[in-house]
Image 1 (cartoon, helix red, strand yellow):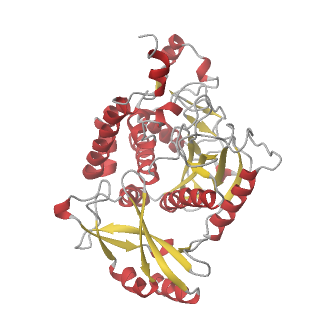
Image 2 (image 1 turned 90 degrees about the vertical axis):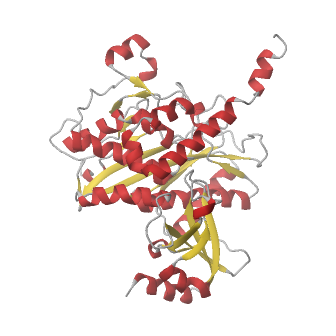
Image 3 (image 1 turned 180 degrees about the vertical axis):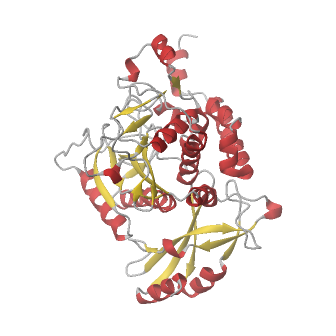
Length: 442
């Protein structure tokens, strides 16, 4: 049976009243419009038209007609509705031009392009991101924590533990498998880890995860934020991303005869990530605030190095366990949870694949705390540093051939244009730090 027919039957059986059609703009913000169940069949076969001129990074006014075509594989019932007993489902959409061709400005299409290249090579790209976030007492611009817990803490009367539990239940009700959840290092910082999946499904999952975390928090009178660095002096929130390539059921990153249990392909992949790390950082860390997290001393990677187990490096190889060959993977620690997952997964994969295609040589691992290595020794070891702010990152991306080719000309130019505007707005601000430091003495 055609998948679309299956969805129509399922929707009827479950008595779905509304279907939300979801898609993402170039900045990673979720967009949505709802249709009634009576419109579902037409939407599945023909798509639904909308005006793309007001969506960030989409069409200009004179070419604004877009079509949202739901992906039937993404059908899921939302764990809440507008009123009690009214069931609402959601589906992610591929954005099309009126003639049915893929729209170049669709981030989901950007990821699908690079995944097709990998598929044609005979591989499947799996990712497992760890999204950290904070709970605060309300949505006002005051970061008041709801707990003072630390890493893996379980505190008495811990409201956040209950929030995490409700969130996990909501995610699993939508078919999203969760590995575990726990308190993170900073007060009121938390993490729910998702079981690894193919990259396209996972990008859709990240978008779903973020809205569910926020929705559950809101329904319980709490504000959840994926802002990379909301609290000065505390660890920021990362999205450490675990990656692997599989050929059928075989993990292409595993080699039992290697001292690190890494295949040559995995080493090329790591070398590609490190070679292109600086130029992809504006994509994996796309906000002004992202660079408040990427500073030494707060468990965020700053230096471009790799190691086994060591958490101060940009690339980390989790410890191998005998009999767990499928778990061999590469962990890239720079991304934060406020990125656009479609674009972030695409550029990370593209960097790794270029390392494989061009057989980049992998540097020696740094099995020391990189933060404690002096600048002179770092230079001697050839350890480079990630961009220090958004503007530096954007300038590096602007010169990047691999990012331009991966994103496509439309998304590449629109993304950089938006980031330059953000930087110009930010640098013109007079901050509370400047007033506190300079007002009375200058």
